[in-house]
Image (cartoon, rainbow, N blue to C red):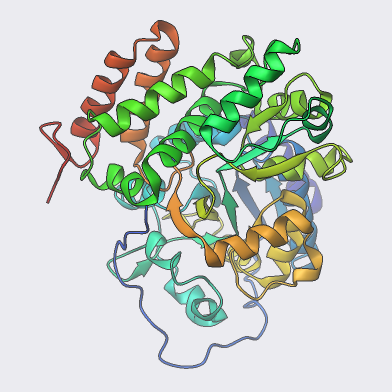
Length: 446
């Protein structure tokens, strides 16, 4: 394809583009010999472009993607990279567009997805992905990817994606200057947190807690569930072993509801970036968000411990609530060999060390160059290998798409009517309808 046709293709594509404790889905195939660590396989002449679909359009996430694209362009100068990113926090908008494209038989060459049930319970179940064991064999990735991550991206011995990072979702970001001004200690328990926000309200801060659009509220809710239930009981929610309509969940929902009374009234109109910036601007003191917020703060040239600070969400210290971004190879990818080149880069040390320090995440690989990572990310690396690990609801680990959608619908109704009893009943119904619950009694489905 000549240069003019390539540029036309790029422009045309741009014009058309505007969701635990780890539970194995199967045992991945182990390698029978040492990997071939030579460079990427030479590409056939027709592998001239690759369209990669994601929701990384702002802040550190967009900058991280750009850094990885730069490495890709240097390694594969003959492949035009089409960045088909669609804006919308947590991928809500992008995945709606992706669903439409898949239904019409028009998949991108690769797309971003979350490791866990979002992947296994949605795309693998629908037969839309190729297994990638061949890439893991060629590149020796089973030796450098965390053993507790591989089962989440596998089923029946087949591995279905390339994880590029690990994120932590249970992070409380705060404004150090505000806490110092009012002599408020960094909260470690829920009681501490409520006391801090009461003190700030008494001092004249109308909304001490910053929130954004609805997915950020679900993100807050999952961390409150973890705080109240603890990691073992939290994990049992997602296997159907803990009753969604029981007393433990009710206590968590009551605290969640109370937290919302400290939040900004314009939350539905704000992005996660907007909510994050309310903290550094001093308009709010706290925000619960994943560690991509740190990437955003770096993008804004903010200084840690001065403009922002961090701590586990009160009551969750010692537990790492995680998610992992990954990329996949769809069945009948339009440019399969070019997509394989992208996946090879995404799983490489070079690619991950270019992407993650900028994005505000830690690499999925365990052989990263730690010197490239800042103070926060090095602390996250340490916590990842020492903490108890559970999965995120909002970001695809613990619930399939249908279950998450039902939970989100129940949450939307709750935000409108503030009826905790109805909310809890609807959450129980969601587990029965789309999750593993039986007759709403928390029985595990077999």
